[in-house]
Structure formats: structure tokens, C-alpha cells
Image (cartoon, rainbow, N blue to C red):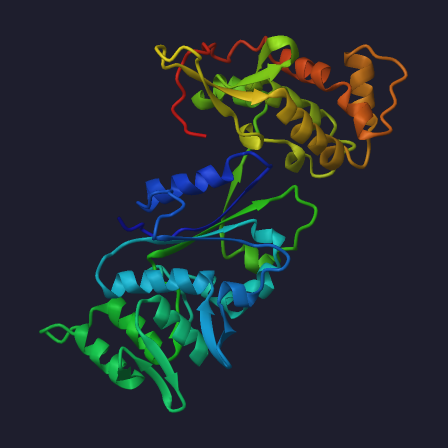
Length: 395
């Protein structure tokens, strides 16, 4: 399955809006690649402050063997993905390949991509508009990742027991058919390798994710950003209910409260997001501070009676107390606690509220969750479902 154009996209949105799930969905539905983390056509990486160009492209590292030291070149994530795509073209498989970069803006993307930045411009045929030169060691990493046996000598590279030039000549002959017409994609790969150059081919897509709420991030400049398609994954609000867009797999998720009380997680999330939205005067980048359905992943709980084969999805009160409440305290209202104090005093009918420490805030966890739930629970357009319904999505 080949896309009309390769996908080169950045998915962005608040935490828990399902960016990773969306990546797998695109891979399967648009590229014909299973979202399985172990799928051989997918290369995954995560950017972070210590991630460098050498991790992305490749690096030469020493190996000790007895009293001697040798050096081996290790291909980085981009070079591995490129090698897989090139091999698929040369071997005639016609398969799509995908490089997934999570947390793109947690690393210095401009420095990490380096000259590969130029390859992000694509022509209508899906190939990079430009070529870039690579070093001999990078070529060794590329060919090795393509499955060839490569050795380096003073006089040059040897590939599959042939001199590099002879290897290239043989490959070029392989891709000229009996009518002397060039099999363009395969020949193009070999021609680039011959010139110690690379391009991103049309069967290699790149999808990245970013969390816009993260404060410890690197800036993405305009030149870098305009070379990607962007897709925003919206956090759920009242509009989600009005438009009947609450996912079926979310409607039945339960939030287990103290004293065996159960409330609906989807209503808590929407009520909370509406509250955060109402505090736009005191919160910067308000849309980044809201949260998605999957901010906390529910646990699958089976019925104690094995004959019923029934299960439900549950989020524990302690999970919410430890993760969600801290996120609100530290990230959403980290600069100004006044909206929280006002909410507790006005809506929970408390007086002389002081939120000096995080422990002070935690005392109101149960009441706040119940308030956010009840503020939405009377919405008419949310379809009522039973807890016995099976949920299709696997968490």
C-alpha cells in the first residue's frame, strides 16, 4: 500500500489527547503498517535534552577486544529508517516505512536534524527536493543497516567482498531492464549511494508528536515548522458533548471514588477542562493546560464471577490524587492559586481557604472531582451507556 504522498506530520495537543494512538492509527489506515511497536517497518525514537545529531544519524564508538581497540559505526534512528526504506525499494517490496519521533520539541530539533533538515522539502513525487552529502562512515552505517557486509580499508570501502565501485556497477546493471530503460526509484537509490549522497524516498514517512504544555522545551523555528503538516488533537470540552463526539471507548470508563462510589471519568475531564478554560485570565496558553481522555490510562477489571466474562475499565482514586491533582497544582495553577481558592470557596462552600502546600490542596480532591463531574452530568446530549458494555479499544 503506497500513499499518494508520504506523510510528514507533527501531531500536537494537550497531554492525554491520544497523540500516540493517532500515530498508530495513521500508520495502519494510511500507510498499511500495523501500529505494533515491534513492527519492522517502524523506527521509533524519543527526543530529549541529551539527544544529539550522532544519536539521530550515527556515531563511531570504540570496542575493546583483549589488548586491542577497534571502532564500529552505529547507525542512528534516521539512518536506520532510511536504510529500511532504501532496501524495500531495491528489493522491489514496495513497502511503506515510518520514522516516529516522540516529544520532538524536548530536544534541540534544529541541531539534531543538522543537514538532514534540507531533506524535509519534498517534490510531488515524494522524494526530497535536494540531496545532501554524507561521510564515508555514514555510508558504512547506511549500507550495513541495509544488510550488506561492509569493511573499511585504507584504500576504501568493500561491500559484500567487492570494491565499492564494483558493487555499485553491479547494482546499476541490475536496475536496467532488457529494454535499457532505468527502473527509476531503485536506480535513483544506487546513484545517490554512488555519489555519497542521500534523499528521503517516497516510501519513508515521518510523524512526530509534541506536548505544547511542556515548559522545558526547545523552540521550533518557523523554517523548521513550515516543512511539516500539523494536526491539532483537541482536548474534550462541552462542545464534545454537544457534537456527540465522546468516543464510545471512553463513555463507560469509571472513576472509583472513596466508599465504593463510582462516577464517570469522561464527565470529570470535561468539567475540569471547562473550569480551566474559565480561568483564561490567569493561565497562559490555556488550551495547552487542558487534558485529554487518556491522561490516565484505565485498568481493565474482570468480574469476579468467571462465568460472566464481563469486564469494565476503571481509574482509581489514588491514581487521580497522585497524578492529576499534582498536574493541576504544579503545571496548570503553578503561578497563581487564586482560581483554585475561589472555586473551593464558591462552589464547595468553604470559607477562609488557604492553599499553602500541596497537602492543603489534596484535602479537597474528592469534593473537586465530584463537583467537576456534577457540573456536566445533566448535559442531555451525552448518550447513557451501561457499565456492562464491552469496550472495543485496548488500553
